[in-house]
Structures are given as structure tokens and as C-alpha cells.
Length: 382
Image (cartoon, rainbow, N blue to C red; front, side):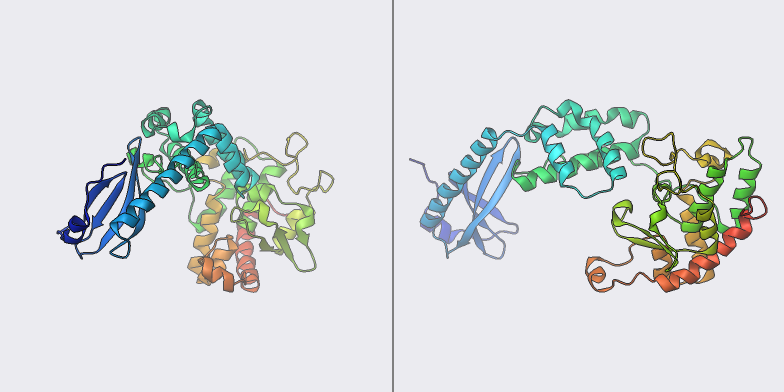
């Protein structure tokens, strides 16, 4: 029989202090007394250094005897849960597979995440509840030593997401791997290399004067990055069937967009000319490749292989275009939608479903006219 420490008299006469405190009764049952004289029955369990507190009820609505009975019931549930988790043992590698299948992300993001998760392969045959924060920290030490702090944070972020998934499944009671990234050294955030919009012509001049002469594909990709203001992966995934010549738009399906939302690009004359000269006999992709497993050209574009790599990245053209729109005084919302950015919160998005297409036609026409004036002296449209 359990040996109880509290009595009805002790409970009724427990006085408040400057801060809340707890009086133990045994069997993990405590009376929590607040400075406001509020009294609450709680069950406090400790496992491997982690504490779990469950509120059972308020005093005096729940008497001492009722609290003890409730504690017995909850303790049994807790022990049954631990036995169930032991019987249905899920290894970390199995948990990761379950988490990956439950996510709704693009193939590119999935591939990148799988690559990052390889860091935790050594933990694969263990349960997540047995993984200690210190040993996780040691596994990213090599990345830290190389100065790859962004990669280390990404790996720890994915691990934290897997742990939250395990918490939702009831495989753990308390998350322990959420704050390991706080132990990493501080790092300076570096934005993608870009240039002011008035130097766009200089970019095309640099391409033209490059020792490594660009191919027709190289030039078209750089033009497409400017004319669409899409990300490099989105540009390379463009397909002829997405082009609607009647509506004068290119519709990129949601599964190919980072935000998982369909994006409509105004089809400007410059973009239409570029698409018209691309070969339609290569699998339907506008930037198709016979040598690639995916059927599209490699992300290792001319920008990465030439002098441009020190000036601008593929993502930098988006920054350039967005800055130009601000200088021209165009609408903030419409300009952000040109880059497929979300400017509303979830509630606002439920009501505001307009994508500013007509305003974006005007913005993109002006931008593409400017882009054409920059590349025309060096790479005129055929």
C-alpha cells in the first residue's frame, strides 16, 4: 500500500507564497499552490531526466481522496503506454521513412532533405527516445569545423521535425532534440549574390565577353530567369503544354512550385519568342536535355561555370527584378506575386484568392522590355 504524506488538513491550510510550489503526496501526486491561493492537483512523472506534468483537477472541487484515485488511473495509463511502445518498437530509420511519406513537398525538396538526413544514418537502428542531444551535437561537429553552419542548422532542423512527428505519434513523452541548434556558433547571414537592376546590361556583356563561350541553351536560360523571375528549378522544369497562347500565360502546376501553389506567368512578347525557338521534339520540356536522367538541363548552368558566379546567382535575378519594381513604384502586392511570394497570412489567403494577374501583366511587360533592351546589343532574339 502506498504511503501517503498529505492530509486533508495540510491541503486546506497550505498557504500561498511569492512563487508557486508543490507538496508531494506520493505515487507522483502533487498539490500545486499558486501565489493567488489557487490549488491544483498534478501528476508529475520523471523519465531519464525529462519531466512530464499532467493536471488532474482543481482543489477543492477534487478532494484529496479523488486526486489519489485519479493518480492511480493515470499512472496505469502511463505504464501501459510505455509497455505498448516497447512492444511496438519503431527504429529511427523507420520513423524517418514514415515522416518523409507524410510530407507534401516538391521532389527537389524531398531529394535535398533525404541527402541531409544521411547525417543521422548511424542512429538508424535505435529508437528516437534513446537518442541523446549530446551525441547528436557531435554528429554535426564535422560540418561546424568546415564552417558549414547553414548545413548543420538544416540537418538539426530536419531532426527536430522528425522528433515532433514522433511526439505526435506518442513514441516519446518529451522532446529533447529541439534546441540543439542553439549550441551552434553564430553565423553571418549571406544573401544570394545579386546586382542593382541598372547593371543588368553589364551582366549580359560579361556573358558575351566570357572566355568560356555560352551555348544557345546557356543564353536562353539566363534570359528565362530574367523574363519569368522564377527560381532556377522552376525555369528548368517549364513544359510546352503549360503555355496558354490564348490567355497569354504560362501556368506552372502547384507541385512544381516552392510554395505548393499554382503560379501564372504573364506571357510577354520576349518570353513568347524565346519559347518559339526552343526544340519541341525533346520530351515536352522547354529546356530539355538528351543526356540528363531527368530529361531537363542541369542546374549547373553557365552562371556557375563562368565569371558570372562572382557577380550573381540564378536566384539573384529575382532580387534584381524585385528591386527594379520597387524603384518603378509598382504595387507591393502585385510585385510580390510576380515572384510567387505569399504576402497574406493563412486567414487572409482563405478570403483573398486573387493573384493580381492583370496588374502583373503590366509590371512584367515593363520589366521584360527593360530586360530586352539589356540583352539585345549582345544576344538579339532570332
